[in-house]
Image 1: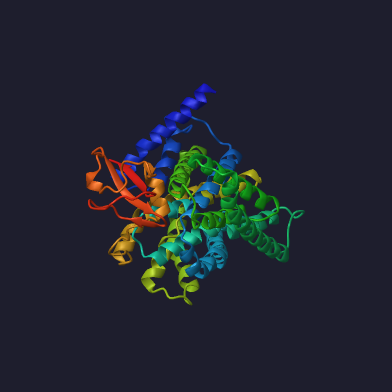
Image 2 (image 1 turned 120 degrees about the vertical axis):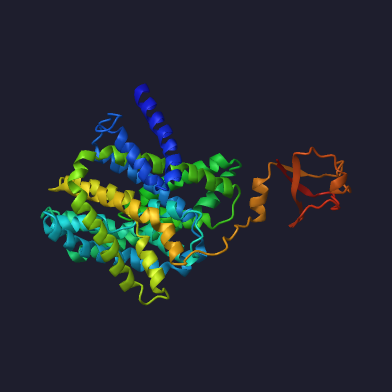
Length: 463
């Protein structure tokens, strides 16, 4: 056990070094994590042999739960409502069109059968929330474009998953399901996903208040438990767990509650750890020498996906909406592949599908190609198309969030020596600053001649 713990610690440490390399050479960090996994694997200097697709699939499921929940947590409700329709169309009809069109093309360019090619198309049909959200974080992209691609990436997995289940059933005549049954399964997945995401989203903060949680770390633990319960409960009744936790994140993230800022930071910590582990594990799962056989066909299919299939689908489906050609092209370019297609491709292996290794290797190659080519140029394309806001909006803090950030809080009673004194008359340590004064329900910006009164609450920050 100690040896495995040591190896995990070393890999995480090396991954942090990879972040510096990523920033220096402008390489997407997700690709660095994959490369680190490949280097640590049986064909790399690490010599770690790992070929357990089921383990990678299970870990990936848990990681995606938190990545998608975190993405929902940071999604503004007004943006979600404003751009839900175009995002929903891309996440449903767009996924079907992408899967079918790309699957047919793959059938003619590879040795896959039509069923295998359509399964392959379904597995690479969705865009990846982890890749998209990590690359667009802190960008000054126009809000409507950022919202559309993030909402699409966070909600298009259900459709892809349904398609995969349907096509997998075609490989076994005993388990084959009809089109009507597939349609019913899709509706059931979406409805239960929305229902349970909404229910748990509405219950979470009241549960925290009823438990009288007074520590931020305990609140984060509550969120973790709710994510697990929400996902598992939804899946157990044949709903889509990813859609449920995404909606759960949106509802919780748009509520006001104590320790919200620090909860968001804790979520980022969990998400970063999950992303690192997931991509490193996927890097371990692949055998680099096998990818050499797929460079030509993988590159060709990647280019077809990026410049032909995705462009046609986006331009066709976005016709009814108010997007110009530049914006449509960016939405198309932002359709990055990531961990989800790779995790989906492990289903071919675990279900014993013929040519499953071919499907996995091609999917893996397309993901790497997509993140490298599209990911490295995403912000450059946005800049060239003049889709960046000139002035980055500085986020404002709610007053209750300001209290959370204060290192010290002092409520002045009748015996306080600070009462009826001006701030400049107080003998405060030079490194201690009053950042705000709460008087009743109002907040006062402190100045040198501000007089402090009985009942005031002083919020301090330490330099």
